[in-house]
Image 1: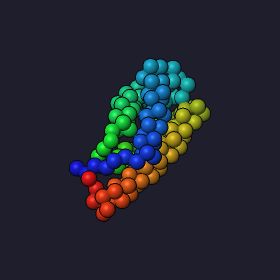
Image 2: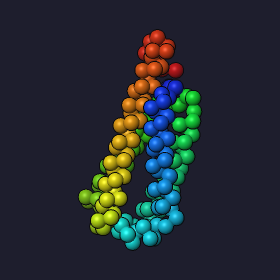
Image 3: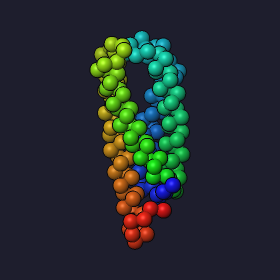
Length: 142
């Protein structure tokens, strides 16, 4: 598996992703019923996605602290963020529930945040690859 040394931008964007996910995850797993009443998003969906986000946050923190990361894992994180954005918009537009205004804002803000983070992570990955190329003197990844 190909590895890269993460650029400062990649490390920062992974950390920013973790910082954005952590409070959202804690909110969703600690008060899902209250949040469901406010947003009309099912509590089971909030709890399940919140539990996932807790694990995802831990992964991001680990990756942000490593001197070398698997490129394919970073690719997966970027694609996963874009998938999360599509899923949020899908729930809002065609979901099995009618979100409240607050619920719609909750989904739209998640969409905007994860797209922005995916772009930052993609740019950080590109900088990491460029740095690896210039350091090694050719296009080979470690």
